[in-house]
Amino acid sequence: MGDLTPIYRIAGIGILIAVLNIFLIQAERKEQAQMLSLAGVVIVLLWLVQMVSQLFENVEAVFRW
Image (spheres, rainbow, N blue to C red):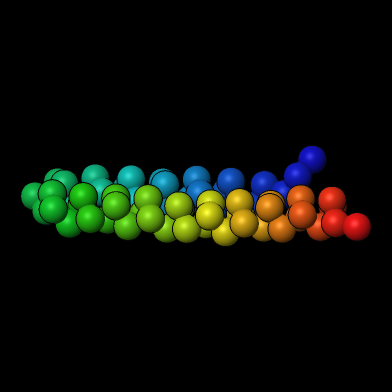
């Protein structure tokens, strides 16, 4: 079984962003809530790009002579 830490990190940031988003919407700060959601998506996408890059490096190392 693989390491589940990245999944927990992504789930944690998702829960945190969702809770903060609810608070901001109730405080009638919809623009800030939208920017917070966008920032959360960007952070997760950066993590995914790093993980995919590491995956490609590992695949390349396996097939290297």
